[in-house]
Image 1 (spheres, rainbow, N blue to C red):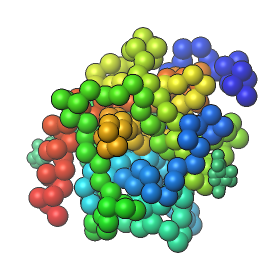
Image 2: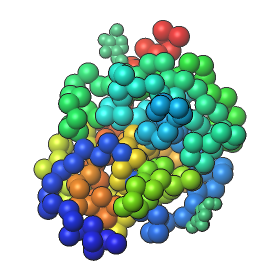
Image 3: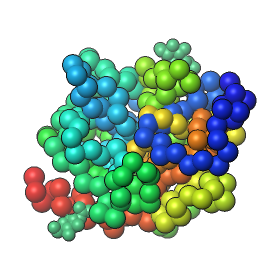
Length: 258
Ligand SMILES: *[C@@H]1O[C@H](CO)[C@@H](O)[C@H](O)[C@H]1NC(C)=O
Ligand SMILES: *[C@@H]1O[C@H](CO)[C@@H](O)[C@H](O)[C@H]1NC(C)=O
């Protein structure tokens, strides 16, 4: 399947990965346990009759979700789901309407992914953060050296027939040199991947997480990938450290307007 992917792809073409996915068969760790990554948020959009998967996100406070700017859309009716590893669950976890979404003011929303691919979403009323099923995650601070491997999380596509998983998927990735993510905008981005597996359509906006001494820290936001590496090579993530002032200000703005 991976060989076919390479043949079908146009070499070096950069595609905005509006929806990104994680290759299921090679996902290290397989299914995520119920109590892991409890800061993972699924952003859903309302389509015709029901909510469907839209993007990933990360819970920074009980009301604020960090995601990608290209996941924001003015005409979209969005909601957030937290507290479950199941995609589009009707029974598990908690769901809240998203009432505001602020993308980075320098991000250009023209269908082409650019730098500044970062956004904050505010939910109508806070999630119940119980420290077990729903937790918040801090940004990796400057004084902590990121470990060699990170976890990339998502509810995105798991095959080339556009199948979406029922359950949260995970891939363990490493930092790559920026040249491995050719032609990508370098401002505030990280290149992360793993041979044979990364994120692809549907995973955008979701977390890239480092675990240090048993504590999880947010390192990045899944942004986009080269078409030929979709599910098979490094992807570009927004480096949250580079945007930590923007993020803190945005969270503060939301807090003050609530
Ligand atoms: C993950 O969970 C799904 C649904 O319960 C199951 O079908 C699948 O086999 C599981 N995968 C792994 C790797 O355990
Ligand atoms: C926060 O609010 C200030 C003042 O209205 C505004 O200039 C700034 O762009 C906002 N920042 C974010 C990240 O929303």
